[in-house]
Amino acid sequence: KQDLFDKVLRHTSEAFAEDPVRVLRVARFRARFGPEWAVAKETRFLIKGMAKHGVLDELTPERIWKELSRALMEPFPRLFFDTLLQCDALHKLFPEVYKLLAALEGLYWHPEGNAYEHTMLCLTVAAKMNYSLATRYRVLVHDFGKGLTPFNLLPSHHGHDINGVAVAEAFGNRLKVPSNILTSSLKTTRHHMLMHNLDTLKAKTFVKLFDDLKTPEAVQALYEVGVCDERGRLGYENNAIDQLSLIFSKYAAYKSVRFDDVFPHGETDPEKIKATMARERIKVINNV
Image 1 (tube, rainbow, N blue to C red):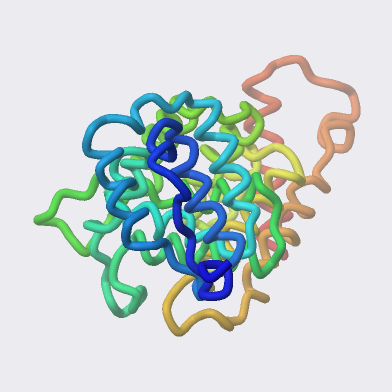
Image 2 (cartoon, rainbow, N blue to C red):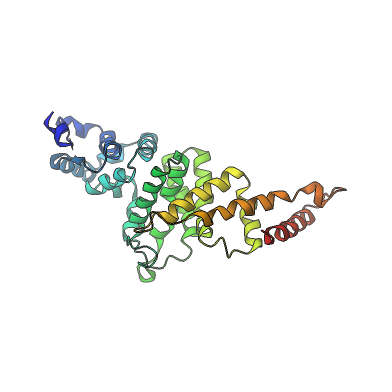
């Protein structure tokens, strides 16, 4: 009763250590209740011991994904990861997220200092925007490529969008993330940097982008990641996002070019179809 009054999360017996899922639940409860809640010192010590002695290795991918997916949908999703970090368990359960701590950022664009903090701020934006689980997951993995940047190249992360695809794919496969969420997250990871330069992108780049995204839902997903990426920076929480809507008008132009209009008498040569459709779409996009 006193712990509840003091907003303290504490294990009730040493049997806590017999079920590693409880570690994830402690972190998830904090993500639900908020930063004013704390994990008791004794519980943190117990979790550290569990991590050190390999107890967390007993967790199945299905149980980890279940707790992660629920934590991402809590009001304070970053606290799930912050709590695991405080208990020396993050590196064991989510090493890709842990590596972002060492991925230093250029302070001009990222005053928060590192890719971990940026990702946590992005998750905070996603929660405030009431985005779906799929988008919150996409946000979580979008900068995994920064964890691969060699120390001597920091704080530059050139190519992290491309490099991050393989990391995000391995992460999703390991946790057995549902295929629809995993597949879409790879596309948003690959293309998220384009959202910072929509006003200067060439029409040809838009055509290639939309050829890959294919659906309006995929375009919306990239937009939502772009919103979180823009505002998930220290001091930029209220940045304008109107410029990101350009992706929708460009996509509408892309979709306005129809096969029947371009080839009223039909066409079967796939190379000719691809080249001609691209050329016509470039013309229309250039006029937007």
